[in-house]
Image (tube, rainbow, N blue to C red):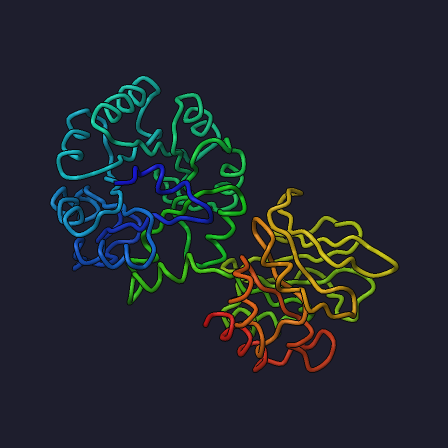
Length: 385
């Protein structure tokens, strides 16, 4: 069986799917949850590992862990509030492959002792931090993997922005897990672009009518971007249609220049598009092209906090290229595919390239900067097929 840590360290974004019946902050989530059935379904939906709450405050027990162990060969994380070596031994006996250790509840001596005991038992230790001090402690303890929780367990307050900055600050030679506050594909992608190897998702799955389908949605690729937005009503249509990224072109040479980076819900990522030099905005990401001969260069880059996180493969300015898809398909790393995409060809382009994201603008318009709602909906739906 693959170790818990190794299961999370592959290419792309992995997911730990969490099984819990309730939580202290949200109350009942899925009171009748069957750990065996859920573990099996979540494994088929693409989970890299399964987390099982064994604490009675979450409606869980060690029997839930045993039931999940029978149902799946995926690595299992035993989750609760553990302070004793006996508790770790009980987890191992019940079939766990990993244990959660909360630095909020443990000093460094206690955490080190439990890490050592976990190794003796063949358990990986997911060491969880929720602020910069705890992250530094986790690093000094040699934790790998490191979990970074968006939720402060003392107040139950969620701060996704702080979490993402901590993820970005974590060492790249450790496996990093972004925990909590992932309800949409874009929120998972935000953690991925900050540097997370995996997300841990619980409440979003347990609240969903079909947890396995929700998991598959969260980790599916490509992301879908609607660009060239200039009006709030078109942003609303893109979000309602299921787009993951909404783009606002701030370059001066386009008839699609947006007045600003417009508001959008935090279930999507806002992208500011520049040619030449990027300017300061409150966008989540920047899509930047060089300027050549008074217009954008062919290709661009996607930036988070000034760091390149994906390459944008586009068509030449106002020209076609029959080798466009083949060129993009041969690239390594994250690829955002742009250039001439629309409802009629995006599905075929996805099959040919397998990009991380797709990007469309002019094909979705009735006039420059004005979207046709039906074309937007058709494009997003075709990209999901």
